[in-house]
Length: 69
Image: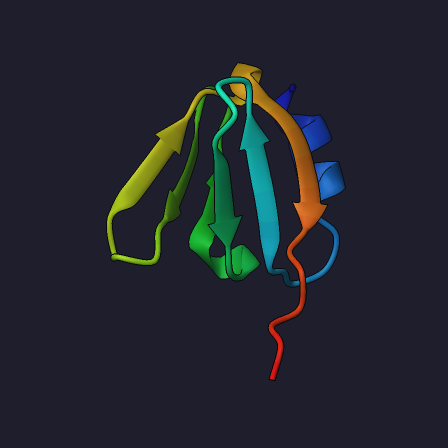
């Protein structure tokens, strides 16, 4: 997916789920945790580590389900 298309699909503050071509799903809690560059997506995961993804491997972006409770 091209970076401009990724930006267009990130509507609202989040949370979002980014699905990649290898079947992994990454939850991004808020737009402040995500950087969309020309050649990479980078965001902080729940453990405080940084995940870097090639935008070409992003196959879907969807709103994350609301937490129950």
